[in-house]
Image 1 (cartoon, rainbow, N blue to C red):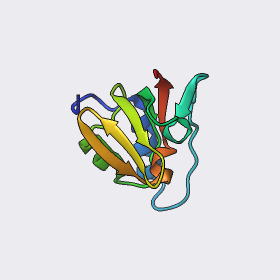
Image 2: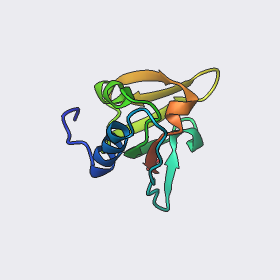
Image 3: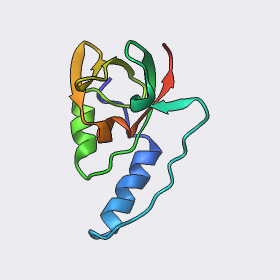
Image 4: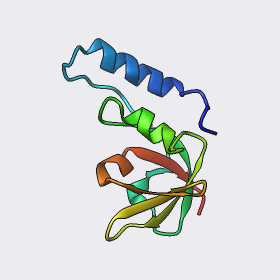
Length: 108
């Protein structure tokens, strides 16, 4: 699962980051109806990852290494005191800023 190709959205984002030369840039996220961020999920629900919008360079590699890639199933284990998700058999604590950039199709 970890060797899935990066969707075109990520390639476009990477190109924008690389061509910005450290300057601020803007990009459009195409969020479809029915998609929610991990922050909007309820504890115990699952969703298929459909989009990841990292806010910092280098974050995609770390998320990919943890199995957080488009097509994988993610479960929100808990929101408090820290946000914890489960991907495959691995539980991961995520910063709320990162979780807000992970979009899923709800599959409860």
